[in-house]
Length: 249
Image (cartoon, rainbow, N blue to C red; front, side, top):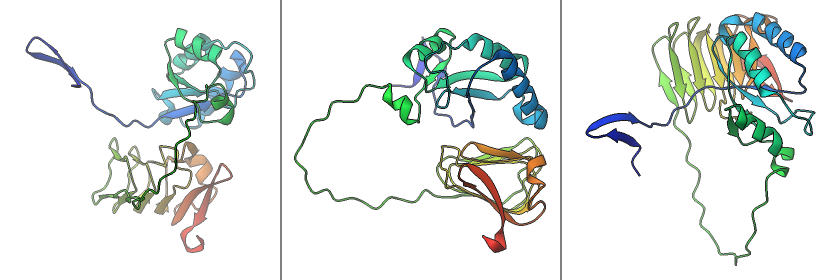
């Protein structure tokens, strides 16, 4: 099946796969005033990062599973603050129906209680046969030898990203695996963007605007308390980002 749409002899558009860094807002409960106040407080910590970002509303930790959720209020509040809600992850059937009515994309949930809402597929017992398992292939790392300048984005969609030069303020580097920066890290670094909680960020000098591992992030104000302007690694431990000196890693 072709991924190209044509009108007569002229090509109208072509579909291509795209990898986009995405932020999920894990909603615990919803009160419109509390939500807007908390959102404004979070934006004030890093206004440049949040401006015009696409956002997914995650319902995997939402307490009101049996209550209706006004997605139009959530969308309106986010738009007033220059954030664009594009989809909903998780939730029960009623909540997903309401999200669809608000023209939001539906994304499967990762949590156990979200999976409980989905029908279990029928199992068919088949006789076991010995299967030769090939060793998994390591994803190749992407290596960048030039400085990553302000406004640039560098992405390693399958493996590690290795940068042999500085990452300037206003630049963004993303990787499915680890990120190694052999120089100052002054921009934004997002490792484990597909959810790999074992991913890490390594840099020779931590001066970042934002660092994220599997969706958990810290902004520069938080990072300055530990390891600032020194060689560190950043990793997830018990869902918290931990900064450690490289010589003690």
